[in-house]
Length: 299
Image (cartoon, rainbow, N blue to C red):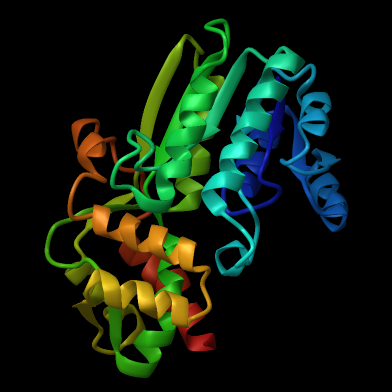
């Protein structure tokens, strides 16, 4: 099949591209960076260099594709850009995708959304996932859409390294012993590759998770991996938001990030809990030993 992969060679798109190429599919990878072209072509895929902000470019790239894998990203540094409204920008990317899918005549779409994509309430900055889901849902019924909703990515744990190294602690505006889902990006790629080759019919939603651990368990797992005690300390929403702003984050983004975290204690996981998936194989303890510990030692 001819498949278009957005997201360049990122945490999910690279392993997904490799899996699909191994299966013999004709893959085009969309990247905004010309410097990625050689790397993409070295894998055996076609490179389409352009931006998600360009609906005309997306239309031409999608034309003739059997399946489009659509995900939204603004690239590195977006959280710190004080001139960027992330929710507005990504919502517009969703509109661009809708236009390109319709104009190119694509009939099968896999959309990478997120936990929290089921609601526009109490999900903070994840609200843009809800927005894009609704935009794509307005496509004609002849377009089949598989919506993937992964949970928190393992690599997000790397943001905890500075305070663990300095103070042996993780500071967040949530905590406790209630288990939460996490996922390895490579597990997401495997699930999406499976969905590529499974029948498409109508609209469907699938959650993707690799493990479920509580914040307190997570601190213990990370501590064990690096050989020191790590404490999880819950702080207030106000403290969290001010800490993010103090670190240079766009104040609007900091507010949305804080609200997203606060949602973990209310309704963020309500739909996930109703449709809990079979957990994928990469466990958090393995990630902590194989990846987190290495990153910590280099920090």
